[in-house]
Length: 318
Ligand code: UD1
Image: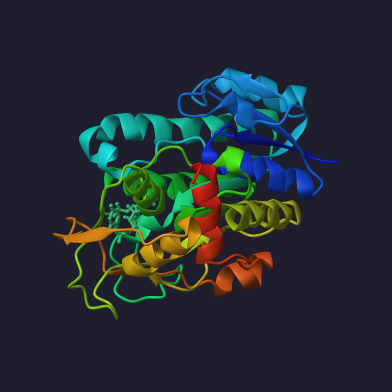
């Protein structure tokens, strides 16, 4: 049985990754500063070490104490708008945090890394579905920190002989369990559920895009599928997998109106909405080419949009 260190394991995505790693036969130890994480999301049989990923010595001690063989590095700030307002803080948290993880791995001889990246590294791609070789032109400090992180991982790996995978998440949604829902209300599905609960109309940011119904297309991926991709990526690195950036999406786009329809099915009522102006910086379409994940990791998404909205609705108590 191998042990994996999961940074940010008390978060929305992290708590799902814990379970996927356990189900794949791995032990897990979590480091999380609980700034946004919730201790109760970490199962009782998983050690939770409360501390920052910037604490290099803590990471190194943890790696040695638990005989860690691989790291899934999730701990990071992820709100795009906030990153525009506080760019240096985002660099500090996301880039410094990663450097600390890489240094601790080097000091303790840990060779396997699964790095949490984002479709935000692409910015507004020229064509969709977007393949991993597409130009990376992030549009926000958040996306920039994720891209710098990919570079840091690749550069460190070249001298430290690391096996790694950078997973570029698309639009993550849903919950495997009502206790593990996304409480941050930063993204479309939680926002629509909140406005419905408050008796308000959801806002559709523009319906004049060059898409079939005029609203933006995104590749929504169930957080349980995403978590399983991490277990597949852990296995890939353990098998000595080469360095790879890999899209984690379904390969299928859903429009904002399709999402609202799906939420209506989930709550069993027509969810009201109104169309407002476009939001600055939104690409019309962002959809993953999902072939590489299937080819390299042997992983494909199993759950659909209705699974995401219905599980998110249950997690929101609706
Ligand atoms: C955003 C980030 C992305 C990040 C992801 C997950 C940008 C450009 N992208 O993706 O980097 O990885 O969050 O945190 O900021 N929408 C509405 N009404 C709303 C809210 C959203 O119509 O009230 C629309 C948006 O225009 C978009 C879609 O819903 O078309 C999804 O929006 P959102 O959940 O914010 O995610 P992205 O912007 O795709």
